[in-house]
Image (cartoon, rainbow over all chains, first blue to last red; front, side, top):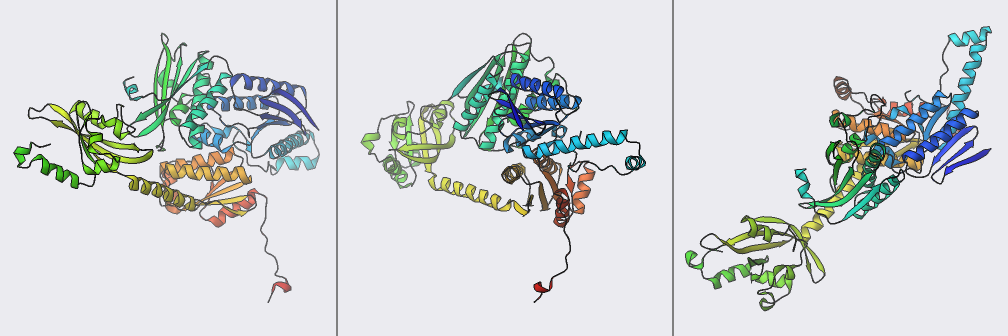
Length: 159
Length: 147
Length: 272
């Protein structure tokens, strides 16, 4: 089920498979990102959202200010207990970001919205699993906690 | 600003920045200006990004200002000159502003200037509480200089 | 020009000498009016001496520098020094790229009375330069092809020196490939790169970061023992998995895409 809430013609927020997808249609500026941030935080706070997918595929020019604005929004989302990933960076934007030496390890990235959603759902399931495990006092669960950590398959990109 | 004497104005564009969304105009105008000058796709994005950084800098810290784009020539090469002017409070510690704060700590300092300096070939800045801030950045067409 | 009496040569002879030169030679007075044009010049402009004599040179030459501060003749007459530059003439609509040289002409007292200019048609040279640039680009394109090894695994073999131009080109190729194919792993094979210093390492690190931003993962293969030593000694963190051989990089790539390579028993049908 997909529900759509637009923030204007330059951005759209939709809920797909329990994930909030923020589609950025144009080059970014302060007010726009603030509105998007508000929309995201309100939604995450009031509903069960696995996480946010920032769809960057229509953003051609991304400066360091906007990158950090988005990274900060991701951090706020995490504080609310959800996850955030970025998908669809264009070659031009990616190239410029590394040229100006922004620290790009602070965000998690994928190619498509689909991959982003997959990852968010898997992470959420893992968190659920871990929570259930912590509350489970059976011998099997004890053993599991003491043993190997069956970690996330996607390589962690530094958090 | 002795080095400014090289500029020969063949083509000039003024962009007024007073509202948050004016940044979008700045990006589009800069990209088109650079395209008219024959810069490559990659360079166009770079220069537009420098304009974006300067615009956000002005809008966030001075509230309003102007961006001026110029075509400049020097011997047998042409380049683009991007000038950012505002009458804000000025940058107190320019040396500090030119260092990267984003790589270590996120703070309110971080004016996009290190980015502009990396993107463009030449970078000049003058700033004081009395007269505001003037930034001049130039990129030449043809050679991709070592950065 | 030398005083005819001093060198034992009169003007008529001097004119013959200048007319033998295959390149246009022109002299103007301080107001830039033409006082001499040799045969090559008249031929190039397609004008007779009557049509040229006394006219302002900018009217006849129609170059990009005419009537601008870039005019070498103006500069030479102004500061008494020779000046040369590239330029472009417009002869009846036809654009001719040139190199030209202007020097001041002085009288016996040393006052500047005008200027001398000669022009070299560099049409051929410009064509050659364009060709060279095209060839250089072709060579770069050939030496940086991205090859798809498997679904979602692409390798970029790099041969030769990695300078900033090359690095940018590699980055463009890789990022475009990722955008087009959404591949999960990009292997950068640098076995053919002779030396890796701080500059080259920084180019590679940037490429790794950009690849990751695009949602792909980079593996650098072809690291030699010497390169490994250099990197550690310089205290560089490549920020990505590195391997000695392409074979090992491919194995690592398969792991990243959750693929296994299995040895299977040959079936009887495949024999003979």
